[in-house]
Length: 65
Image 1 (cartoon, rainbow, N blue to C red):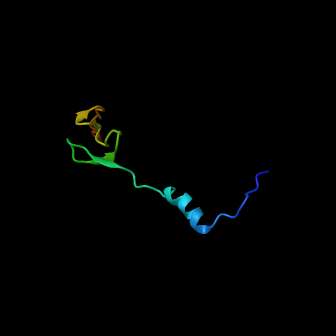
Image 2: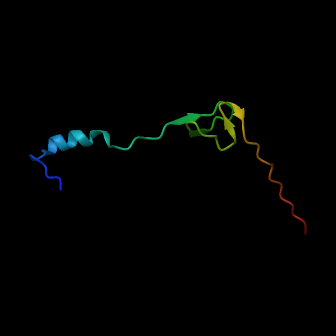
Image 3: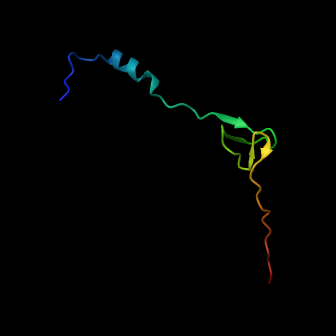
C-alpha cells in the first residue's frame, strides 16, 4: 500500500490541480449559413468547411382529409 513520505500542503495541492479546470468548447461559424457549430463537426444544416456534405430531404406535410 502506498504511503506518502511527507504531507502535501494546500498550496502544493492547488498547484497540481491548476490544470484540471473545465474549458469552454471551441466553436466555429459556418461560412455558408452563419451557424455556430463544434469544430471539426458538420453544422446542423449539413455543411462542413463551406461545402454541403449532407443533403436533407424537404419535409412536406401531406394533409389529406
